[in-house]
Amino acid sequence: MNTFDEKRNEWDLQALSSSDLKKQVCRPIDELSWQALITDITEKLQLDDKYNAILDVGCGNGLVLSKLAPYFQHLFGLDYAISMIEHAKKLLPEHKFETGDAANLRYNDQSFDRVLSYSIFHYFPDQSYIIKAITEMIRVTKPDGIILIGDLLDKDFEANIKGNSDVKIEATLPAIMRYSQWTFCDLHATIAHFSNQVKKIEILSQPQSFKLSNYRKDLRICL
Image 1 (cartoon, one colour):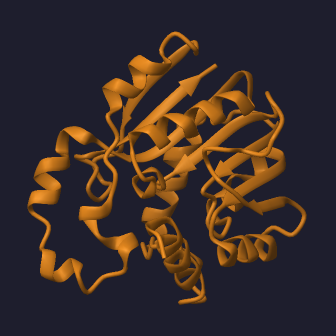
Image 2: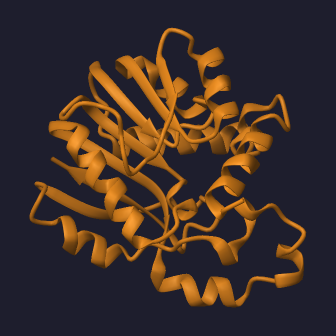
Image 3: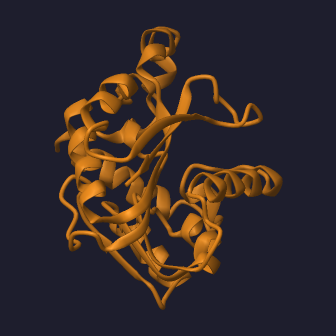
């Protein structure tokens, strides 16, 4: 079994591990912290009206999308874990969810007013895949639309974070929870790659109240 299949299987098991929707997506946080997360996403996506459609790449069980539903007529979600998509379809049965590959989106050009991808890029195999995935997100976003890529691990902190990881503890954890296997994003190289293709691309800090916000950043792309 390759690393991709291993991680996908572990997310399938994670989706079945609890009836708590937050725990299913590895976010067993209190309700106040959860609301702060949704508020931060809403503000960074600049949601101040009713829009046609949003795509969540790496949507998990659809919990985040369910909180953004008041702003959109149509919700679309993509994830590579079948069990996650099954949960999302139950949570939001009137909307559209499918399994798929973030670097090969099966949607038409300029389909979405907003595209969200939160806390999944560190599971990608490498920086090259990150570039491919963002290229696809830009393709499917409408002119004047916004893409928010949240919870990116900043490569400037990679050596320190991985150097302090306890290998013995990691060995007891699923692959999706092992720091040593996470991909850290080269934010400066990413901005340089796309700066001439979009109106604006910027690194956003997370609120200081967010756990581990010192090395986790958000990327907003305005078309």
